[in-house]
Image (cartoon, rainbow, N blue to C red):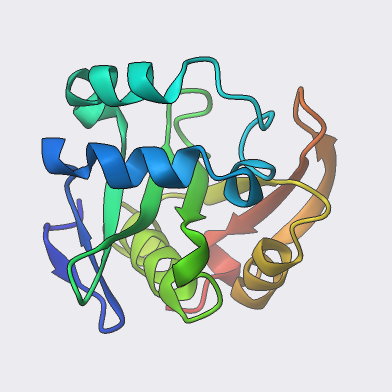
Length: 165
């Protein structure tokens, strides 16, 4: 279990708070960000998202905070579908893409899973056009499988033996 808050050098991994609602909504409703997340369709209005945000804090995963205090994104390791092979997800606001936040967060989460929890493997579901995420996954050692999820995203896998801590 990652002790929060966790300073990762370039950013901070922490719990979500009610105060993150507006910034989280701005990220989740940004079409350039959302086109690669899930099916790209928001099921609620932005106002409903903000209103329901306090009730969803335990389901949000980790908040990624920039050193200046702004919410930069979110990350999770979801074990709800395949507990022994959870799905890693990292979503960053446009202002924080391409500056090392994703790599730092992925390395922290993967280190915890493989080194502390002693997990066997991790999956990632990625839109085939998301070149930044694909480059990050490949640099971390993830390998594309022949599978796709129900919305057409490619599935990548990383086993503990291939992880470089």
